[in-house]
Image 1 (cartoon, one colour):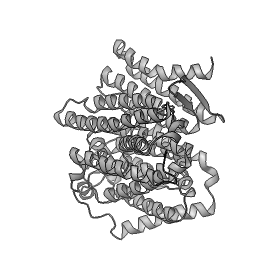
Image 2 (tube, one colour):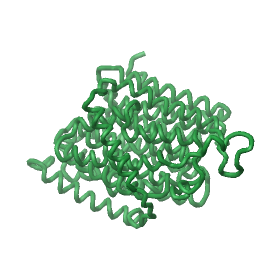
Image 3 (cartoon, helix red, strand yellow):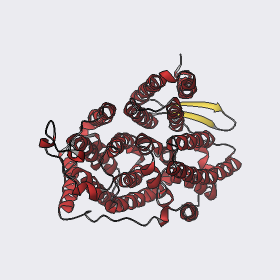
Image 4 (cartoon, one colour):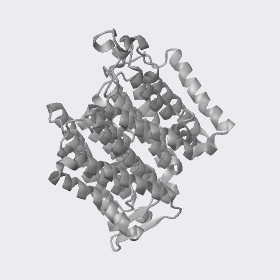
Length: 499
């Protein structure tokens, strides 16, 4: 069997399993976990391959699949996070419908990471939106349905802009392939980028993300923030690598996003909203350095999935209440500390290599701005790392009653953390060459400055931020502002883009 045939089977398999789950609901968890393991193997095979494979499906339209190391990192992220979510839900009362939709989501996310044309990408992103909506509304509560519908409306509006851009691209070039962007008009490029930036939670058009990710059920939040949000950023990374002249404006948006997200997260008092805002910031880190984005996406996905799974088991989402309570169970705190330290770029964890590789691609003002964002990220992580911890005396017979007693982690959460946190330790082996004195000193200085600022009172002020920018009508207005900004930038490039 050729690699091309294996790729086509691998793409179709999650959907086949998803539909089979309806017929065999008793095997739902096993089939879904088996699919995650298959994707894990495919992602590792893509990473180990030194060549790039391209599949032309419809030559006349430029419908193309591309398998390479960049996509391999993202596929691996999807596989590991999906496996962790499945293990977390293993003992829950989730029905076959939940696992079926999880498989549809898994398969459509995989499709994005090997797409090299805008029409296949459009189909995959629309399927992702529907599957995400069904998972978000699985609880059937009024709140869940409202949040899901809001997400669906924002997504559909963004994809309408995107589809207009794709049509304009085909009109100009006769192809939907990423490579045809060289012939795109500035307005086509601006509309395409707007749709992807919104889906990826980038800059002000991505402010839909905090409410959506924070209000979803814990395992769904882990999927959304660990994997799904990256489906909007990935095509931009691939296009940025193909067209270097496109990278400077994307990097500028990435820097603005990194600072915007971390600025909001620093004063946020709700743990899940803080993690969602941190995700916005981390998408900025992906955009500024496409060469390092694959490994960065892997480390961020594992760490953020861990943090959302753990945050869903905290006694409260309010950081003020968590600080005032006797403390957080040591088992919960330990998992949060490892994941948060990885996001902050601490040595001995995979996040160190990801941040070091990213910062190595930068220079001048961009390096200083992203260093500032990295210090802010350390401050945000410190809000979790320095939560009070329940003493050992609160364990066992005679322990205090109610919420002061330490409860052991549930088996599903232990298994999920074993996958994600274990992955952060193992993935550290990908970047052993970065453990040199210069890079170690820089990383430790960022951690030290962040820790010092926290100790001096930084980020102790927690406020309830105004939600006006997150209202639906304001989000649509922000899309209009961003598309005008993008059009102006692309038109001002040397000789104009596509002119």
